Amino acid sequence: MIKVENLTKRFGDLTAVDRVTLNVEEGEVFGFLGPNGAGKTTTVRMLCCLISKTSGQARIAGYDVGKEADSLKIRKLIGYVPDNVGLYDELSAYDNLDFYGKLYDCAEEQRKDNIQRLLTMLDLWEKRDVAAGTFSKGMKQKLAIARALVHDPQVLFMDEPTVNLDPESAKTVRDFILDLKKERRTIFLNTHNLDEAQRICDRIAILNTKLVAVGTPEELEGSVGGRKTEVQLDQVDDAIMAALRRLPLAGIAADGNKLIINVTNPEKENPTIVETIVRAGGHVQTVTVAGSTLEDTYLKLVRQTR
Amino acid sequence: MRLSKSWIIASKDFKVFLKRKNIIYSILVVPLIVSILFPMVIQFAGQRNGAAGIPVAELTILLPAFTFFYLVLAGMIPTTIASYSIVGEKVEKSLEPLLATPTTDSEILLGKGISAFLPPISAILGGATIFMVLMDLFTYGTLGYYFFPNWNTGIVLFLMVPLAAVMSVEWNVIVSSRVSDVRVAQQIGILLMIPFGGIYVAGELDLINLGVTSNLLIIACGLLMVDVLLLYVAKAIFRREEILTKWK
Image (tube, rainbow over all chains, first blue to last red; front, side, top):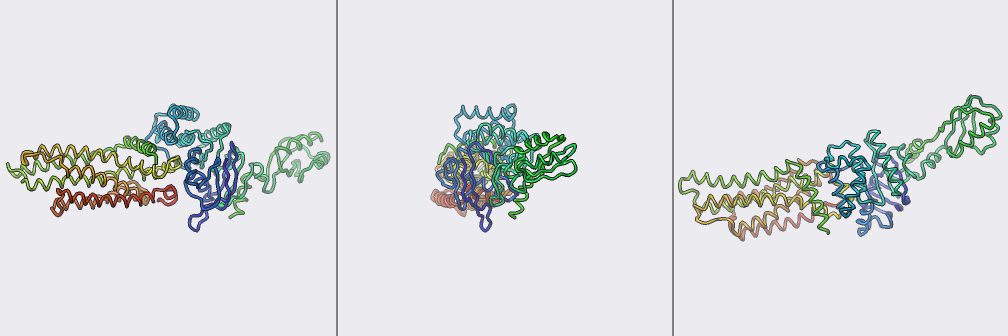
C-alpha cells in the first residue's frame, strides 16, 4: 500500500530525512518510532503530499507522491491526524466533521451515516451539537481521528495520537486504532510511546533521520543482545540442568534456585523449557522474561546512530 | 480550480464568524457609524450656517469626498476577517488538516479570500445605501436635486471599493505569513488604509477632485495594477510547503 524508496528531505543544509526505504502492506499497522527531530513528521508530511520530497520515490496505492497530478488523488484516499488536533472550536462536533466530509466530496447521505457511525463509536454522538472548543483533550483527539476517517480512507496517517492524553483517553484512542485494524485499514502511526507501538503495531520502524531498523516488535527486541527467561524453582538439581542442556538453547546459568536461560523467541521456547523442567522433576514457581526489551533496542539503536 | 471547494471553505468561515461577536461588531459597527455620522455632520454644520446651510459649491466637493471614505473602510474592514481566517487558523493549528484535504492551494486561498471579502463588502454597500438616503434627505433642500446615486458614486462603490477590499485581503495573506498573532496581523494589515486615507484627505482638501470621473478611473486602474501584483505575491506565499515549513 505504501512503498518508499530512498526518500530524502533537505531543508537547506539540514537533512531531515535521509534515504528512507520501507514498505507498508495493506491492512498493516506500521509504527514509526524515533526521537524528537528524527524526521517522523517530515516523512508523514511528504507522504501526505503536504511538503515536497528532495529526492527518492514514494507511492501510495500506486500513486506517485510528488507528482502534481497524483497529489489530489493521494490526499483523497488518505486520512491524516496531525500532532495538533486543529479543530474549529466554535463549530460543533458534527459541523467539524461535516465540513471535512464536504471537502472530501462525500455524498450527503454517506456523510451523515459516516458522521453518526464515527461519533457513536467514539462516544461523542450525544455531544454532536456541542462546540468542539468545550471538549476535553481526549474528546478533541477522538474528534480529530473521526475527522480523518469521515471519508472512509484506505490509509490513515496518525502523528502522535495519544500524546498529552490521560491514561483513560489514551486507552480509548488505542482501542479505537485496534478496531480500525480489524477493519483492515492501513495505519501509519508516528509515536514516542514504545508500549503503545508494541501493543498496536504489526511492524515498527525506528528512525533517526536515517532508518535504523524495521521489524516486528519481537524481531526488534531480539535484534539487540537477545532476551533472557528467568525461571524460579523451589530447587535446582543436576537432573533439571541435564535435561535443559539437551535443548537447543543459547546458554543456561543457575543463580541459587533461579535459572537464567538465553532465548531468542521466548513465546516459542518458554513452553518447552517449562515442560522440560517439570518432566525432570522440577517445581516451577515463576517464569519471567527479562533482558532486551523494545525500549532497550530502541535506545541502543538510536544512541548508535547519533 | 473548483469553485465549489472554495465556497465550502468560505461557508465554514462564515459559520465561524457568526459565532464570534467581535468579528460581527467590527464588520457592522464602523460602516454604520460612518453612514449615519457623515449625514449628521452635513445636517448640523448646515444649521450652524443659518438658513443658507452649506453652500452648494462646498457640498459638491464634500459629498464625493465622503463617498471616498468607503474606500478607506474597504481597505480596513477585511483586515479583521482575513487575520482571523488565516492567522487564526494558523494559531489554532487547523490549517494543517485543511491542507491535507484534496483541495488545491488556489482553492483554499480563494475560499479564504471570499470569506474575507463578502461580509465587509456587504456591510460597506449596506452602509453606503443608508449614507446616500440620509444625504439626499439632508441636502435636497440646498441642492434642489438628489445628489445620490450618480455615476461617480457607482464607480467608487462597485469598482474601487471591491478592488480596495481585494487588495486588503491579498495584503493580509502576505502579512499572515510573517506573523503568528492575530492582533499583530490586524495592526500591520490596517496600515493599508493609510494610502486610501491620504487620497480621502487630498479630496477633502481639494488637492484632487474626487468628483471627476477620469480621476476616479485613474485611481481604479492603479488599484487594479496593485491587486494583480499582490495576487502573484500572495499566491507564491500561500503554498502548502511554505505554510508548513516557512510561515512563522
